[in-house]
Amino acid sequence: MSAAVGITANPEIDQLDRLIGSIYDGPMESPPWQTAMQLLRDRLKAGHVTLMLRPPSTDSTGIMLNTGSTTVQNVQAYETHFFAMDPFIRLPEGEVLTAEELIGKQWLQSAVYLDFLKPLNIRHLLGADINTRDGIECRLRVTRLHDSAPFSAEDKALCKLLLPHLKRSIQLHARLDFLECERAMFAGAVNRMQLGTISIDQNGNIIESNQEARRILAEKDGIWLSGNTLCVESAQESRSLQQMIRHCVTDAGAADGPGVVEALSVSRPSGRAKLGILVRAIPMGPFSESKQRPAAALFLRDPEASAVQPSQELVRRLFGLTRMEASLALLLTEGLTLDEAAEKMNVRRNTARTHLRSIFCKTGVTRQTMLVRLLLNSVLSLG
Image 1: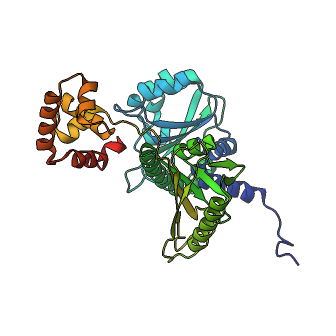
Image 2: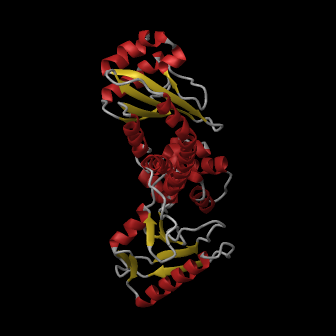
Image 3: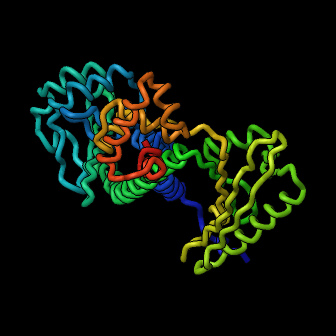
């Protein structure tokens, strides 16, 4: 017999459960917490629910998430002007207050009410502030129109009940945002290094690929994508690649595995240089549970790809070179001889040699090959 038999459904509890669940789902939405704010707005019969993830200041317009009827002009008016007049700020942590409770009757004489809220037909204002030890400062604000009843004790109690959940959800959002910023930074660096990356789950399905990998696959020169499967022109190379992927995916199932690394060259029918492919297992963490997580990563390198040329300004700043010296150094890293570089710069060979000696002195190298290696191994490729 089902354990649920005899239990009477409670719509009030169901609504509250849905509201709290939407708060924790909020960090996954874009914009975040839209569902939760809309549910809270409906529950409180409010005109607006606003979450200021970063309140406006003299240095920034901040980040404001809104539900309810509003215009871009109204939001901008508060972000650039009225925020400085707003006395309904710095609320006690964990407390839910109306504007009148915090400020008194003079609230209705304040400039932000008379010049901003009243023209928008907003009469009642309920709020709470959220502060964390990490320095996060957020504001929750709920409004009602002039023809609406004031917020009740029950309304305030509901908001007070939701505050700890919203605070935890905001902290989760901050953590996810940090990880996404870090991921974007590393992904950008990998792209600038002309390195293609493909992540594969435990079932061998492709989860994600970066811009360089998509470029290589789109050329369909020896390797391409058919649906969600990697295809290789050479049957032997295809079998080797699939075996390598299976090996790495299997190895990824062990949290303390050695981390298998395999490598393969893929021939290109066009006759261009072979593509280099490295497959690396991504071992599971001690608490990994999702089968959709990356289990293996493929790294693709096209030896004939045109590398992004670093700017002369970066070379100058990094090594203290003049513009002419930086130009010569970059030409040498492209594989030009000193004579060819001099011709391209429209200078005499002796002039180029003089610049080269100066470069040697400033960089501490004594040979042209050492200079090229120094530049190629520097942070210039990340610029």
